Amino acid sequence: MRRPRVTAALAVVLAVLLAGCSGDPAPRATAPGSFARDVDLTGRTFTVGSKEFAEQLLLCRMTIALLQSAGATVVDRCDTKGSENVRSALTTGAIDMYWEYTGTAWRTYLRQESQLTDPEELFEAVRSADSANGVSWLRAAPFDDTYAIGVAAATADRLGVRSISDLARLAASGSPDATLCIDQEFTGREDGLVGLLRTYRFQIPAGSLFTLDLDEIYPAVADGRRCRFGEVFATDGRLNALRINTLADDLDYFLPYQAALTVRSDVLTRAPRLALLSERLAPMLTDQVMRELNARVSVGRRSPDDVARTFLREQGLTG
Image (cartoon, rainbow, N blue to C red; front, side):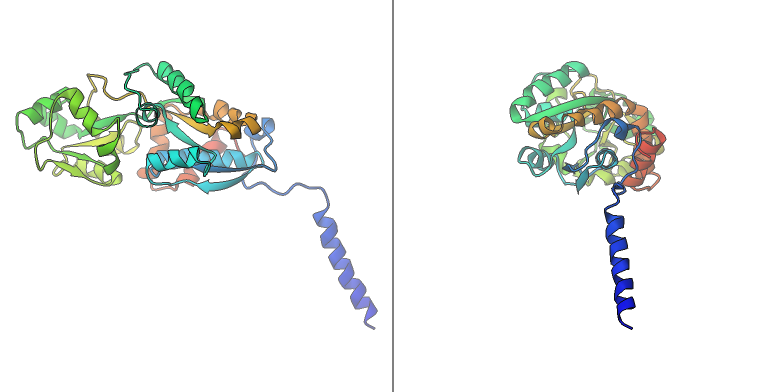
C-alpha cells in the first residue's frame, strides 16, 4: 500500500523540477519597457550609489529600476552621506556608478579654479579631465541644479534684495537682517561658502551665520525669522511651494551643475551598452521636470522609489 504514495510524491517532485527547467525566464525586479528592448544586462550585477538628498535619491532609484528592467541584479547603495564619500566609493570600486554634478567635480574633485560658465564647455572639460581617474561621464541631463542663495519672496520685497551683490551690501551695512543658513558640507567645499564670500567681498556678521541640516534650511528661510537667507538648490521642489526666490548670481560665482551618470571606466568597458541608459533618460530631465519630481518627494511626501518608478512608466522606459 506504500508504493502508490511514494509514486505520487515522486510525481510532485518531478513536476516541480520540470517547471523549474521549463526555459521561462525569471520575472525581472522591474517590468521591462522601451529601454530593455535595446539593452540586455541579464547575468550582470551593478552597485549603484547616490548622495542623501531627494534629487539624488530619485536619480539613483531611476538608475536601479532601468538596470533591473534590462535583467541586471542591482546592489542598492543610495543615500550615502556626503559628496566626498560617494565619490570615494566610486573611485575605490565600492560602487560602480552614481549621478554627479559638473560643478562639484570641477571644483571639489578635480581642484580646478577656471571659471567655466558655459555648461557644454564645462561638461567636456570635466569628462576629459576625469578620464585620467578612471571615471567616465555619460550624457549630461539638461537640468542645472546649481547652488543658489534663497530668500522668502516677502523678505526680498521688504529688503529690496534681488542679487548676491545686494546681500553683500546688506551685510556690509551691519544690518541684523543679513543672516545666512547653510549646511555643514557647504562650509568646507571648494565651491562653497569661502569662495562665495571671497568673490563678493563680504562677511556675514558674527552670530548671523547658522549651520543647519539641509532639509531644515528651506522652511527656516520661508519663515524668515532665524534665516533671512539660505543655501538652496535651483531645482529643489520646495522653492515654489514655499515661495522662496533665488538671488541672481551677478558675478557668476556658482558654476553650472548639470547632472550626469558617472561610471567607473572599467565597468563601462565591460558593459558598453550602459551608455544607452543616459542616452534615453538624461534628455527627459529638464529643470521643470526635476522641480516637479523633487516636489513630489519633498512636498508631496511620496517615496523617491515610487516617484522614480512612476516617472519611468509614464515615459515608457519601464513597464
